[in-house]
Each structure stands twice: as structure tokens, then as C-alpha cells.
Length: 122
Ligand code: HEC
Image 1 (cartoon, helix red, strand yellow):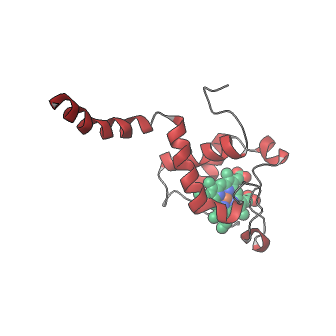
Image 2: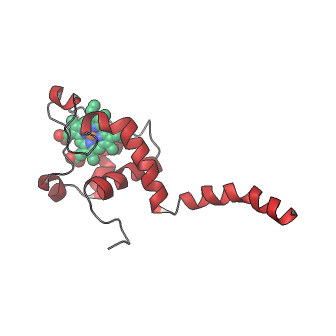
């Protein structure tokens, strides 16, 4: 009984600790951030079909296009999300999101919207 209680007490700690390692959980975090902060311009599917896109020039990036797949690396995406794209509606997110959150949302776009493998998954 005491062991069961002890286990219940350490379990939440273990779950929090493992969420940093488990790419599936980080993708969940990335999805939440994407839907809250990015979808409004980039669209649910990442294809830049959003209402806001009608009013933006240059338009939001369509992550699903062949051009994006050629041009975007994860590193470039992390930099663009962190620092923004000057002269465009793509603002810097470094004040609103932590480095971990930026990585999670980029991984979500990379894996779920661009259908590319995450490192160590090839
Ligand atoms: C207000 C509209 C808007 C919002 C909100 C927005 N973006 Fe963007 N995003 C843009 C535009 C416009 C571009 C195209 C910039 C350009 O042409 O260089 C862009 C480009 C990008 C690019 C490609 C940059 C490159 O290097 O070419 C990435 C990656 C990106 N956005 C990720 C995100 C993420 C992640 C979020 C949410 C945290 C987000 N965006 C929220 C408008 C937006």
C-alpha cells in the first residue's frame, strides 16, 4: 500500500521528465502551439489557405509546396520562427515562446504538415 502511494507520488514527476524525451509528446505540444498561434495565417493544413492570407503580402509560407520542401531546413525554420522575417507579417516569436516550444512547433510542421522524418527516425 505504501509502495502504491509512493508510486502515485512520483508518477507525475516521471511523466513530466519523459515529456522532454518523447518526440510524440513534443509533437502534441507543437500541435497545440500551431493551432493557437500559427494556423490563423498558415492554415490548419499548413498550406497557407487561411482567411488572413488574403490580406498579407508576401503571403504566409505554404509548408506543403515542393518549393518549401526544397528551401526549408529545420534549422532555417527554427531561426525564422525565433527571429521572424523582417518586412513580412512573420513576427519573431522569441519573446512569446521558449526555445523548446519553438523546436516543438517546428517539429510539428516538419513531421505532420511537411511529412518529413524527424532526426533519428529515418
Ligand atoms: C500574422 C501571420 C503569421 C502568423 C501568425 C505566423 N506566420 Fe509564419 N509566416 C508568415 C508569413 C507572411 C511568412 C512568409 C515570410 C517570407 O516571405 O519570408 C511566414 C513564414 C514562415 C516560415 C518560413 C520562413 C522562411 O525561412 O522562409 C515559417 C517556418 C513559419 N512562418 C512558421 C510560423 C510559426 C511556427 C508560427 C506560429 C508560432 C507562425 N509562422 C505564425 C505569417 C505568419
